Amino acid sequence: MTTAITHDDFTLEQVYGAAPERIFAAWESVEGRLQWQRPADHLHMVYDASDFRVGGCDVSRCWAEGDDAYEAVVYYQDIVPDRRIVMSETVSKAGRRLSCALATVEIDPVASGTRMRLTVQIAAEEGSEVFAGYREGWGALMENLVSHLTREAVS
Image (tube, one colour):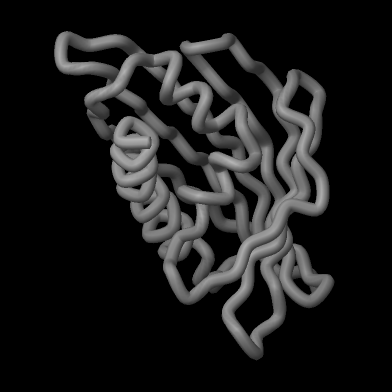
Protein backbone atom coordinates (compact mmCIF):
# COMPACT_ATOMS: atom_id res chain seq x y z
CA MET A 1 0.00 0.00 0.00
CA THR A 2 1.34 3.42 -0.95
CA THR A 3 0.86 6.36 1.37
CA ALA A 4 -0.28 9.64 -0.22
CA ILE A 5 2.09 12.58 -0.31
CA THR A 6 1.17 15.95 1.16
CA HIS A 7 2.86 19.29 0.69
CA ASP A 8 3.62 22.34 2.78
CA ASP A 9 5.63 25.50 2.34
CA PHE A 10 6.63 28.46 4.44
CA THR A 11 8.83 31.54 4.36
CA LEU A 12 10.79 32.97 7.28
CA GLU A 13 12.60 36.32 7.31
CA GLN A 14 15.17 37.77 9.66
CA VAL A 15 17.21 40.97 9.57
CA TYR A 16 20.75 40.59 10.87
CA GLY A 17 23.09 43.40 11.87
CA ALA A 18 25.84 41.96 9.69
CA ALA A 19 27.00 42.34 6.09
CA PRO A 20 25.78 39.84 3.46
CA GLU A 21 29.32 38.45 3.26
CA ARG A 22 29.16 37.37 6.92
CA ILE A 23 25.76 35.73 6.48
CA PHE A 24 27.00 33.83 3.43
CA ALA A 25 30.21 32.82 5.24
CA ALA A 26 28.12 31.30 8.06
CA TRP A 27 26.51 29.01 5.46
CA GLU A 28 29.73 28.30 3.59
CA SER A 29 31.74 27.11 6.61
CA VAL A 30 30.88 23.64 7.94
CA GLU A 31 32.49 24.62 11.26
CA GLY A 32 30.18 27.64 11.39
CA ARG A 33 27.13 25.57 10.50
CA LEU A 34 27.91 23.13 13.32
CA GLN A 35 27.70 26.08 15.73
CA TRP A 36 24.33 27.46 14.62
CA GLN A 37 22.44 24.76 12.70
CA ARG A 38 21.68 22.56 15.69
CA PRO A 39 18.00 23.30 16.44
CA ALA A 40 18.24 22.70 20.22
CA ASP A 41 21.03 22.50 22.81
CA HIS A 42 20.19 18.90 23.81
CA LEU A 43 20.74 17.62 20.25
CA HIS A 44 23.97 16.25 18.82
CA MET A 45 24.96 17.02 15.23
CA VAL A 46 27.74 15.83 12.93
CA TYR A 47 28.58 16.25 9.27
CA ASP A 48 29.65 13.02 7.58
CA ALA A 49 30.32 14.93 4.34
CA SER A 50 30.40 18.59 3.34
CA ASP A 51 30.85 19.99 -0.15
CA PHE A 52 29.47 23.54 -0.35
CA ARG A 53 29.44 24.19 -4.10
CA VAL A 54 26.90 23.88 -6.92
CA GLY A 55 26.40 20.13 -7.35
CA GLY A 56 28.02 19.46 -3.97
CA CYS A 57 26.48 17.33 -1.26
CA ASP A 58 26.32 17.56 2.53
CA VAL A 59 25.36 14.61 4.72
CA SER A 60 24.56 15.37 8.34
CA ARG A 61 23.04 13.55 11.29
CA CYS A 62 21.18 15.06 14.22
CA TRP A 63 19.91 13.17 17.26
CA ALA A 64 18.87 13.32 20.89
CA GLU A 65 20.59 11.00 23.37
CA GLY A 66 19.06 7.51 23.15
CA ASP A 67 17.15 8.21 19.90
CA ASP A 68 17.76 7.29 16.27
CA ALA A 69 19.45 9.99 14.25
CA TYR A 70 17.76 12.03 11.56
CA GLU A 71 19.92 12.00 8.44
CA ALA A 72 19.79 14.95 6.05
CA VAL A 73 21.26 14.72 2.57
CA VAL A 74 21.53 18.14 0.93
CA TYR A 75 22.45 18.87 -2.70
CA TYR A 76 23.36 22.44 -3.60
CA GLN A 77 21.44 23.37 -6.75
CA ASP A 78 22.46 27.03 -7.05
CA ILE A 79 24.88 29.25 -5.14
CA VAL A 80 25.49 32.94 -5.81
CA PRO A 81 28.07 34.15 -3.26
CA ASP A 82 26.68 36.68 -0.77
CA ARG A 83 23.22 36.55 -2.46
CA ARG A 84 21.54 33.14 -2.78
CA ILE A 85 21.65 29.43 -1.92
CA VAL A 86 19.20 26.88 -3.36
CA MET A 87 19.35 23.35 -1.99
CA SER A 88 17.34 20.15 -2.14
CA GLU A 89 17.15 17.95 0.94
CA THR A 90 15.96 14.50 1.90
CA VAL A 91 15.46 13.63 5.56
CA SER A 92 15.42 10.03 6.79
CA LYS A 93 15.26 8.34 10.16
CA ALA A 94 16.11 4.68 10.85
CA GLY A 95 16.35 4.06 7.11
CA ARG A 96 12.89 5.48 6.35
CA ARG A 97 12.63 8.56 4.14
CA LEU A 98 10.46 11.15 5.88
CA SER A 99 10.54 14.11 3.52
CA CYS A 100 11.99 15.82 0.49
CA ALA A 101 12.32 19.59 0.41
CA LEU A 102 13.57 22.48 -1.64
CA ALA A 103 15.00 25.39 0.36
CA THR A 104 15.93 28.80 -1.00
CA VAL A 105 18.00 31.26 1.03
CA GLU A 106 17.97 34.85 -0.24
CA ILE A 107 20.51 37.27 1.22
CA ASP A 108 19.74 40.94 0.60
CA PRO A 109 21.55 44.02 1.93
CA VAL A 110 19.36 46.49 3.85
CA ALA A 111 20.21 49.71 5.69
CA SER A 112 20.55 47.92 9.04
CA GLY A 113 22.57 44.96 7.73
CA THR A 114 21.15 41.99 5.84
CA ARG A 115 17.70 40.50 5.34
CA MET A 116 17.75 36.74 4.97
CA ARG A 117 14.63 35.16 3.54
CA LEU A 118 14.25 31.38 3.72
CA THR A 119 11.56 29.64 1.68
CA VAL A 120 11.05 25.90 2.18
CA GLN A 121 8.78 23.66 0.07
CA ILE A 122 8.24 20.17 1.54
CA ALA A 123 6.77 16.88 0.31
CA ALA A 124 6.11 14.22 2.97
CA GLU A 125 3.88 11.24 3.60
CA GLU A 126 0.31 12.05 4.50
CA GLY A 127 -0.13 12.28 8.25
CA SER A 128 3.53 13.07 8.74
CA GLU A 129 4.52 15.31 11.61
CA VAL A 130 7.60 16.66 9.82
CA PHE A 131 5.93 19.90 8.72
CA ALA A 132 5.86 21.32 12.25
CA GLY A 133 9.42 20.08 12.79
CA TYR A 134 10.63 21.95 9.70
CA ARG A 135 9.04 25.22 10.84
CA GLU A 136 10.29 24.93 14.42
CA GLY A 137 13.74 23.74 13.40
CA TRP A 138 14.37 26.42 10.77
CA GLY A 139 12.94 29.10 13.07
CA ALA A 140 15.41 28.04 15.77
CA LEU A 141 18.29 28.01 13.27
CA MET A 142 17.55 31.55 12.14
CA GLU A 143 17.59 32.70 15.78
CA ASN A 144 20.76 30.70 16.44
CA LEU A 145 22.42 32.54 13.57
CA VAL A 146 21.86 35.82 15.46
CA SER A 147 23.81 34.42 18.44
CA HIS A 148 26.50 32.96 16.18
CA LEU A 149 27.08 36.29 14.42
CA THR A 150 27.19 38.12 17.77
CA ARG A 151 29.78 35.67 19.22
CA GLU A 152 31.79 35.85 16.02
CA ALA A 153 31.84 39.69 16.13
CA VAL A 154 33.10 39.63 19.74
CA SER A 155 35.89 37.11 18.98
